[in-house]
Image (cartoon, rainbow, N blue to C red; front, side, top):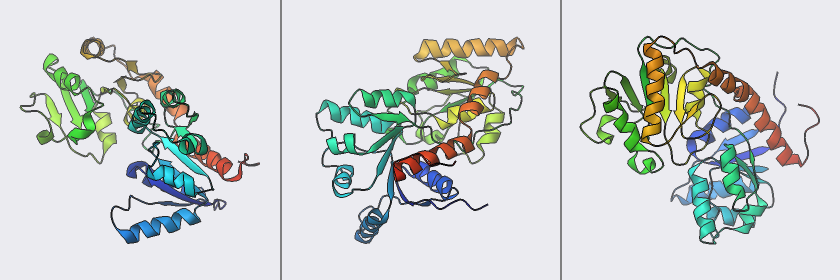
Length: 318
């Protein structure tokens, strides 16, 4: 059955999310188009302006909020709806701009603000930006919960680009393998040459991985340690497969821990349960991920909210 036609939707911002949402919303009838940053090409900028004029809704994934920013100019020139979906470090920048008293009232008050994690909505609220928590669809959520591997293995996440690691507790992540010499660790997506040398012998460093499902299947515990974060897709993907998760932020079914000693102790407890034969699947985590982050449910909810933005009212039939 063909989806009913919606409006023209121009998606700008972070490429991974932008391309994902373009596909999701096209399937639901939107004339969705993701456009990457035009760079310095005047023709690309002219094309962007043309699409901005024609779009019924502009959807920004990640944003800036200061006066004089491109987003501020967009708010000044455009009269049709603009949605900003905040996803993590962009909120940190907004908080810094608020401290400098540089926030644009046009952006703060004129756009529709969503956040992909409830704590981000709270942070935005603290600077007067009213944001609704709207979860993004997670494409790799799994309904299959394969048994934990016979060998206890730990999966770490650390960005490959050093400048993107400022929000990650890299020191704790890279200290853990030495404290657990009998445990195999894997870190993604960071190739060996991007990490301090020498690497511990029980730490495997991989770059981009195409088949994450296979990696999750040979993982017992996923650890993500961040000073600031949005709702991590990788955390939710691991939980949906019944894997145990240690993360800095609160999500049901995961162990919340930060700082070296707390993370080490949480991992030691899980490892001891593995050695004693009592570490089973993380059923609470899998249940939470499948209940609250089902892909089709979240995609339909996003479609509904965008229709509401377009029409100003809830659609009569969903």
